Structure formats: structure tokens, C-alpha cells
Length: 206
Image (tube, rainbow, N blue to C red; front, side, top):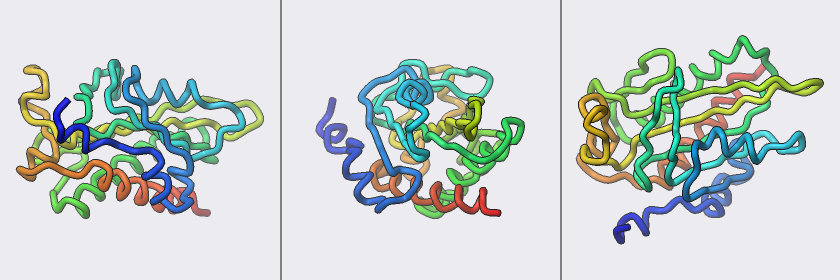
């Protein structure tokens, strides 16, 4: 691991402290390696777990996107995380959450990094005609309680072309590649979590 990688680490306590009591990010964990953050958050969740738990992973060995497609997660190069939500919606309305996630990711990339992302419905975000991010919502029915929603997000942040497999290289991009400079992942993660918290409350407002 290079000195740059060591310095550019996600630190759960610092993220949580700087969010100042928001719902999304009220509790944050950063795992070094996991199969997928959606799997990890389900394993950590009990009936008492509060909405807003966020689990990041520096590396996923079995990250997945829509239709069980594999998501490449180069270690310490992207933002791979999931959020535990308890929305007061029925399961067949989960598409609303997918739209919300994709729109919030796209708007944060645009506002924070001055890029022009385009949403490729239902769940992908593209920059310069190539995929930079994807989202995945998995619902779990709960008896006598609000259903669980696991909102997974993957964003290519600091990869170079060589960090992608040859199969993905023609259609994948990172924000660093689009900007021709590296991005502070912790700073970008904070901006994204703040936007997700605000827009989630707006989404569910009566």
C-alpha cells in the first residue's frame, strides 16, 4: 500500500463526528474487507438497530449491482457503502429509493466536483459516457415493523484505468480520471452523506 493510500483512509469516528447528529450517519463503521456492504449491514442489523447506520468497506470481494452483476471494488480507491433505512413505504415502492439514491449521487458529483453526470435508469450514473457509480436497493419485509431497506452505493473515485479489469475498462471511469486529479474520499463522503440525509427526509415528507 502506498503512502497516498495510507493517508487517504476513511475514518469512521471522524465522519460521524463531522455529521453532527444527522439520521444517515448517526452510526458509521468502516470495514477493511467484506464480501459486500449490503451483506455486512444485514449481518449487523437487529430489530433494535437504528435507521441511519452506514457501513463502508475499503474493499469488497463480492460487490454486486443490479441483476446480481459483479461490481469491481479496487481497494482504497472508491466509496463502497450501504445505509440501513426503515422507510414507511410498501415493498413495491422501492423504486422510489433507487431513483432517490441515483439522483443524490449524481447531484453531489455535479455540485462538489463540477462534473456533468447523467443517470442511466434505473441505477447507474455516467460521466463522459462511462459508468462512474451505481446504486442497489434491497428490501426486507418485517412483521409488525417498518420494512428494512438496504441502500447500497458504489462510486469510482480514485481509480486509474489500470485499476479496472480489461472487460470493464472501455465502459468505466472514475471521478479522478474525469478530473485528471485525485479526490479526497473522506471529504466527498461527508458531502454525500449530508445530501443523502437531507434528500431522504424530503423524499418521505408528508
